[in-house]
Length: 313
Image (cartoon, rainbow, N blue to C red):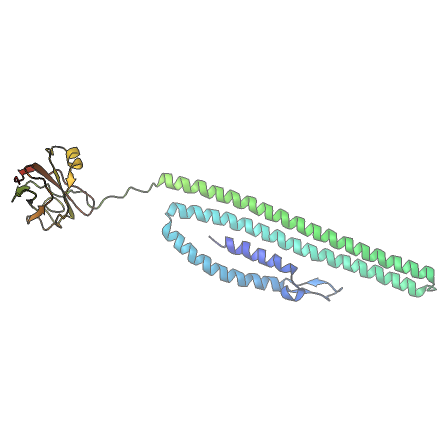
């Protein structure tokens, strides 16, 4: 889509970096009051991540658009725009939370430093006796306690803002994904995939010249004239020659008959072909029929039925 993954990934990386040492992401210790924050480092990293991830996303988008219909591609872009908008809102909220967090810390640090300085000034101006020392120590403890409480409050506010921003993003993305699913279904309904059209729907020609000859007690020869792939045109793919000791009248009779092994590969239409059939029983009438198939799976009608009696032993 248009940067959805990039924005989510970069935001996660950027904010996880806040747990790293200061030098790793632009946090500066020792500013005006010993505490300041530099966003330049984070934004530089974000720009780098943006460039790298967008390169990959653009390539993926091109491949997806090639595979998708125009309707589905349009629906995906709508979803991508919605997720991008939600990502922008989340990032703005998270950056605002970060700024507020460090602003609160700096303000609290200033108050602490001021309170400690005032306490020290008062102590230096006092008699510096035990009572003054006690007051000084109590003032410093109060300043430090307030500083600790302010830090905790700032951290809580930051976490709460980030959690709310993430939850809002997940809700918006879930809606965008659901809308995309509905749009895809509508696209498929409006533009159903057409059934594939067979490139070859013409069956091979029906053999009408099947004959039997050369009978012995256990064998005979079947002969016929080849038919084409499409009627009398071209070359078929395979033969299915079957024999039975009962008449072959219907397709059911043919299916119940015994298939002959060793049928020849079909030759050009009009060519005479034959096969020697062995393993027969003496003094028995055999009925033969033939079907022809092409490369598309089309099968010819049942051929003429030929019969012949094997010789006695």
